[in-house]
Length: 475
Image (tube, rainbow, N blue to C red):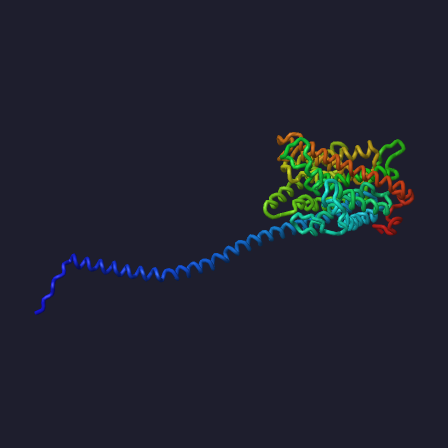
């Protein structure tokens, strides 16, 4: 019978532990040998996943930037379309406020404004306005390669600025309506679009001396502020219109022997009212479009400008209505229409810088001042302005520009900003006004002395449509 030695429990436990430790040691060695290629495979997979992700992030950022630029470009071009649509608005207002016999002449001049403005501004005006120089740039002679870059397609920016130049030119048409030779109108609309407007525009939007004007050393003030053109566009057109109407003289029958003013009613307030509605609509491109963008922070800015623009128009119309009602005992439609335009002109300079309440106040002030300005120019200065262009655009453009120095939430006098901003606004508005009225007077007086700018008495009495254009608007 075989006998077996008995193994104690302690030895058994020790043997088990030695087996476990040995197995673990062998396994760990094998695992280390296998872990290296496995880790390398894992890292390779991670790199393959991360690299495209990082590349995609860069692509996404570039795509978003391109999308933002595209959105800004589309908004700028859409705004240019809206401003262009203001041309028929001006045409209808001027035609409605004048007599039937001159309607075709009015419409023709508004077409010519945009035709010549488009050609002259791209030929010389664009370079003069946005080329290098403190006083003026150099004519670009149809070239768009003169070192100007504002981050958006230059062709689109040219179109946007062209419609603004045409607006300044067409303002003059109404003040000189019903007695101006069409050939002479061609001369001065060319000079306005190609020279006068671009030079003063260069002082401000083109980076000229007014854009960085600082009178008292306050570095927080960035110079003259005219966001969308109360002075640069509207006052320039209004003051040139005043000079032209003064040189031209009043219409036959406007003033009696004692110099008393006589009303010469327009032939159709219906189309005048339609014209004002179109202009009100177009102003939503004129002012918000001047932001030149709709992406990022611009979406808030253009929304604010939409609001202030509309409030000023409503305030101007209401103020003119009530002022006319109190002054003349009747709520005049024609004065209310001009009051709306006065509010729009007044807010154009500071639509981005004032609060909604400030915009409403500016509109109300413009609507009231417009009525007294019309009366002063008509009865005191004895200047015949059939549509009130010099009052609406010249006077209210000046008023609105000064109001920026009062009501701007950042730097305005009423918001604790002191008088420097107001002083800069006054210097800019008065300087540009003096340039416009001076240049306009020289041009009109020279044309009058050399060629004569007024039609004969017979043509004026019978109407410019047939004699100047060989056709009538109404048959």
